[in-house]
Image (cartoon, rainbow, N blue to C red; front, side):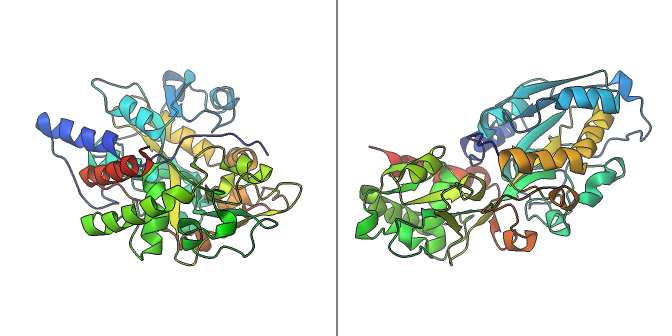
Length: 373
C-alpha cells in the first residue's frame, strides 16, 4: 500500500469563522444551526438529464482519488469533460469555495466539520438520493454521522479515528491512556510526538480530562492548555506527517496518530495502534455538491460512480484509510497487521468532531500558545 501524506484534516478554525463574519457583514446570517440541517433549497433535477452537455470540476487532496478517474468518468458517464483541482488543506478548499464569485467547483472533498460549515451557510446542494442509488452500498452507521445524520448534504468518502501508535519492542508497558502521552514515563522522555493541527492537538488533553472534543467552554479549554504546556518539555516534537517514520526508525516510541498512518503493516511487526480508554474521535472526509454548480446531475452521477465497489475500494487499498462502503470493503484484501478491518460500530464509539463556528478560534489560540517557542 502506498503511504501518501496529506495535511488534510485541519480543523474548521479561522477560515470558517472568517466566512461567518464576512457573510454577516454582507447582510447574510452567520448560522449556528445544529448539524444535519439543510438550509439550501433543493434544485429540481432531471434523473435522465443528458450528461454529455455537462462538465465537472472537482477539488480534492492530491492522491486521494485514482489518477485515471477523470478518464473513467468521461467514458462511463459520457460527460463532456472532468477536471481535477487540488487543495493541500481544508482551509485552501474553503478559500476556493467561499470566495467572491462562482468557484466553478461542482464537487468538493472536505472533512465533515467543513461540510457542516458550508451547509450552514447555504452553500451546498442537498443530496438527491434518487440520483445516487449506490448510497445503498454504505454501512448503516455511515448514515448516522452527527454532523449530517441521514447524509442530507454530504456523502462520506473515508473515515477513521485517532489514537496512540507505538513500538511494541521499545515501550516498557503498553500505553492504554492518553496520559501515557501527556505525562510520558522516564523511558519515553523526548521520544513522544503530538499532532500540530488544532483540534487534534487538543484532543488527547480534552479526553484525558473527561471533556468533549467539541467543548467551547473556556475553563475546560484552559485546563487542556495547561496539561499540554506541562507536556511540552518532554516531547520530541509536534508532527502531523512523519511520525510514522520516526516510529519506524526508533527516534520515537509513542506518537499521537491517525489510524491509517500508523505503520502497523511494517514487515518487522513491531508497531501497534491503541485507542485510549478515555475514548477518541471519529473523523470523516466527505463529498459535497456546491449549490452554485451548473452540473448538478453530473455531480450526483460522479458521487454515485465513486460509491461503486470497484472505485471506492481504491481508497482503502491505496491510502490505507477505511471507507464507509460495505460493498467496497468486502473487496479489499486486508494485509496482515492492517487496521482496515476495524468494524464500523467500533468507529462510531468515537466522538465526531463538529464545526464550532467562531468558537473554533479558541483552539487556534490554544495551539498557538502551546507551540510557541
